[in-house]
Amino acid sequence: MRFERSHTRKAVALAVVSSLVLLTAACGGGDDGGSGNNGSGGALEGRGPIKFATGKDTSGNLKNQVDAWNTQHPDEKVEVAELPESADQQRNQMISNAQIKSTEFSVLNLDVVWTAEFAANRWITELPQDQFPDLGKLLPTTVDTAKYRDKLYAVPVTSDGGLLYYRKDLLDKAGVEVPKTWPEMVAACAKVKALPEGKAINCYAGQFEKYEGLTVNFSEAVNGAGGVVVGDDGKPNVDTPEALAGLTALVEGFKTGFIPKAAITYQEEPGRRAFQDGNLLFHRNWPYVYALANKTDGSSKIAGKFAVAALPGLSGPGVSTLGGHNYAISEFATNKATAADFIKFMSSEERQKANVEKTSQAPTWASLYDDPALNKQFPYLAPLKASIASAKSRPKVVKYGDVTTAIQEAAYGALKQPAEKDPKQTLTDLQTKLSSLITQ
Image (cartoon, rainbow, N blue to C red):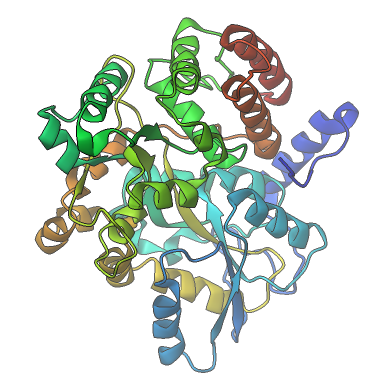
């Protein structure tokens, strides 16, 4: 995994992090970029065209959303800077721009777990909370992802919870119920594969390539077995029986073929395409897949044949890793007033509803999960709301890039065949590594 390193050498890392935290707490960010740091009580200044840096739009709806803004604001148009599909590459590019204090990007579309890192390094601007009055109408867990040390640095625009997509037609044909646990899912696949229609189908896949998605899938395996990656005390806790049970389930999945060999290369999109092409019985992915897999334009072979359920755990209900994206203002941007208004526009109830209708991406407005028309179109919204409410966040740490890299390398080494280490040694070594990276 190729992460840009934003920290100095280990010998002075603690001192640097401490300085950053003190500076952030004292003034909320730097005064580079000409518009001034705006803190919790300052004004966001400067109007004019801005550039919005975001990952590749796989939904196909971002242009419609931005066009709606540009039509209403001809003198403050937004240009989309579409970054790569990989979350890791998006993060790297944003960090590279921030490290040279580039004014190119105005608004950043951040993975929810990047907020602490970007805020602590003063790459994004602290936002005046009184200028974003709708925050109280959003799901509380999503708002929490936009804060660092109780100060607002971003606004949640989409959320995400992991879902289990499954071939309802094949489960019905085999006479099996939707599995609620990992063993039930294994047993269900065996029954489906005994059918002529299911003989060639692969059982299950998530995201197991060595990138951010693997951190998510590893975390869900650990949480679904009753463990935690980082405890409430902020300390790593992966060298436990629960974490071992979760990782072992994934390792055995690859060894037995329950998870196909090809899945070690899957990010979100390759897995989605495998499911849509009819090659997977069960697939863990995000809500955005629903609209794409249900298209009737010939791009999906399973439209009308699948359904969605909560993630299974090892012996009970699973636990999703909290996903989603927050919009933040680059500390080095000009035209920050326009940037703030664009964020308010994109995070509004109207725009989020329009986006859900077109993409099935999870909104952050609580009211949209109870909207009758949306629930008719997307019947998974009610359980998704509960999933997001109980979801666990990835580690909120300043050195997130180093932490997620360590998790990815450890998990990937255990999952690939032949494995580099057995699950027990993998977790023992990971505990040591995380303990050196996560300091209080």
